[in-house]
Length: 239
Image (cartoon, rainbow, N blue to C red; front, side):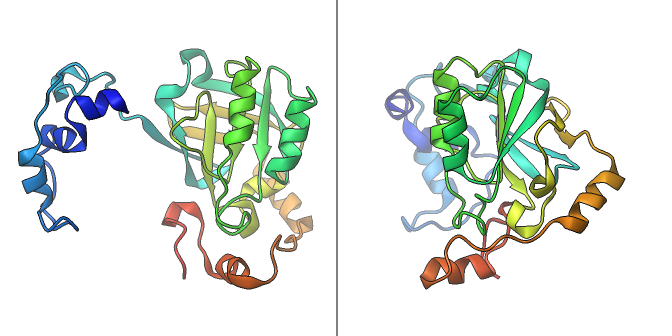
C-alpha cells in the first residue's frame, strides 16, 4: 500500500488507463478523466505500463459451475500454480465458528476442501468475512494442500485457494447448501470452473429433503435486511 502511494497512488493507476475510462463526475467535483490526467506515475516498476504488466490477467477470477451457477470469486494471483487446479473432499460447516473449531482442532488435512456456508448476505446475515479460517489455514502451512469455499466473503489479504461469494448462497437454496462431507469438489481456476462431482439426479434428490434453516437473527434491522437482500452476484442489494 505504501509502495503504491509513493509511486503516485490511485490517480497514477487511473492515468495508465485514462484512454479506456468512462468519464463520469465524482464526489470531488472532478470527472474521472480529469483525475486520471492529473495522475503522475513516479515509479514505473510499481505502477507499470499495460505492455509490462505483472500478470497477463487481472487479480480476480470469476468461477462458475454446478456448485456456483451464478458465479464465485477467487483472488487468483494469491493461489500457487499447483493449487490452481485442485480436486479435494468436502468438509462442511454451517458457520464460521464451527469451521474454526475444526481447523484449530486439527481436523482439517491435506486434500480437504473446507466448505463454510450460511454466511452469505442473507445467511450471515451481511456476508461475513472469512478472515480467521483462511489466515489460520495459511498459518498452519496448509495453503498448498487445502482449499476453502464459502458463500461469505474475503478481504484483500487472502492467500491460497479461497473461493468466496458462492452464488446463489446457501440460505437462498444454492447448491452449496446440499454439499455433504466427503463429496469431491473440482476447482479449475484457469478454466474458470468450480464443480461438485455429484450427478444432477443426486443433487435434485438432496434438494427434495433440504429444509430452509431458521435465520440466525430474527429481530431488528439485520432481520429485515436478511429478508430482502439478494445473493452476492447481484451485489447483495436490497430488493
